[in-house]
Every structure is written in C-alpha cells, then in structure tokens.
Length: 261
Length: 44
Image (cartoon, rainbow over all chains, first blue to last red; front, side, top):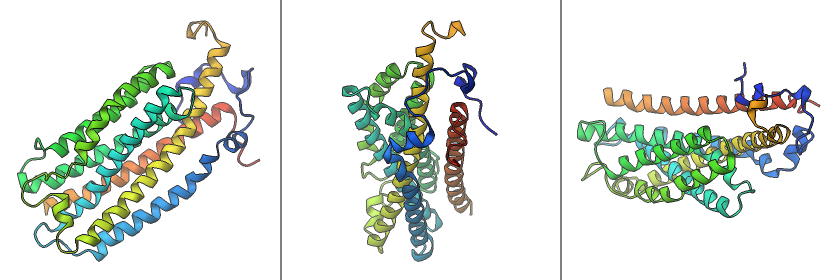
C-alpha cells in the first residue's frame, strides 16, 4: 500500500526528461553521508530507551506518596525536554536558513517539526495525567502546561506552513518567523516551577530519596528520545530533499505552472 | 485504579504514536522512490 502523493499526478518517471542531480538512490545517499547515521542512531535510541525504562519500571521502587502516577514522569519529563530541544534546534536551523537559504538548514526545519509536535503533544497529555490527581482537573493554567500547549501549537503551525504554502522558499521564510520568536517558549517549558505547589516539581522529586538515580534515568530516557528524534528527522530530511528537488525539476519543465498540465 | 490506567494508557499512546510516525515516514519514502523509479536501486 502506498499513499498517492500530490506530485505523482503531474508526470511519471517514464516521461521524465530532465534527470535529477542524482542518477540513483545509491548516488543520492553517497552524496549525503549523514544519512548513513540513521540506523546507528535508531539502534542507540532503542538501547537508551530500553535501559531507561528498565531502570524506571524495574529498579526504581514505587513512590511512597504518589504511587504509580509517579511513573508518568518518566515519559512526561523526557518528552518535554525533547520537545524543547527540538524546538531550539528548529529555531537555530531557521536562523541559519535566513542567511543560507540554499543550504539544508530550511529543510531541516521542515523535517524536525512533525517529531517535535509528537513530543509536545505527548508532554501535554502526560502533564495532564500527572497534574490530575493533585488538582482534580485535566488542565490548570500552569506555566509548564501552557508552555507545552504553545510548543505543540508552534510545531503544528510550522507543519501547516509547509503544507499550505507551495513555494518552499516562501514557506521557509514564514516558518522562520514562527520558529525564531517562538524560542522564548522553550524557556517556559523547561522552567522548574511545580505543576502543583508543594510536592510535584520535577526538581523537588529529583531531590528526594533516590533522586540521583531518578535524574540519571530521566537523562537516559531523554537521550533515547533525542536520538530517536535525530534519526527520524534525518530520515524525513531525505524525503524533503528529494521532494524539493523533484518539485524544482517539475517547475523547470513546466514554466507556465500547473495550468498547462 | 483510574490513575494507573491513565498512566499505562499514556505510555501505550506514546508507543503507538512512534509506530505510526515511522510507518507514515516509510510510506512517504516509498512513495517518492516509486515516483523516481528508484525502487529496485537497493537490490541492484
């Protein structure tokens, strides 16, 4: 089964007249060495997550006060960190893309956004699960939850930009104006303020009994999620490069635009 | 009980989202490779 792509109706490989800059998939991959890292990064991500969740669920005893709800932190905190790091990386690539629009940096913005949205949504949902027993509500106007919402909205806005704006350069420009100012949200997402006062701050939890191993576990899982995000972003970057090159090739052969089809 | 259920549901949802993301990406890759006629390239 394959998803029919929007471009697939324009022409077919049989009638392609102007070849892409690469003669084959092997040729394409040989000119982009960073793609070789994808399998290694995937395996490393899997190993980190397996080790981290083993420590979290087997080695770590149940919390005496919070019980099993405490387990949600091993997903909530790494997801929040990963989403924030991904947004910061996206903003940096967007900034670089402003100065070097022909580089891979703007394409990296497009490649990072969906995975960032996934982690931001996960952070938001697990944050609600964590806060609910203390507040009795799925959502409170806490800075961290609001920052998680803002991160998710910004990631989705970047994705929507690339979906709606046909010209890649123009979409890069708009996405940069979303990503670069939006980086202030990252600080709010990582701000060590408790979702509920008194006991539920991540920092307070890290300082409790067994806090050092908890921070280590959180760090290992966070590293696993970040490695996964890099691997999947590189794999998506491969698609983005090929799609943009294909689009450029199609535009070269159809200067009058789509109406001449 | 309900709280534990939500915790495990959140973990299951996270795993499901990752699986769906990888699956969609593989479909996207295959779509563009088929379009470019590069599907047999790896086996060659």
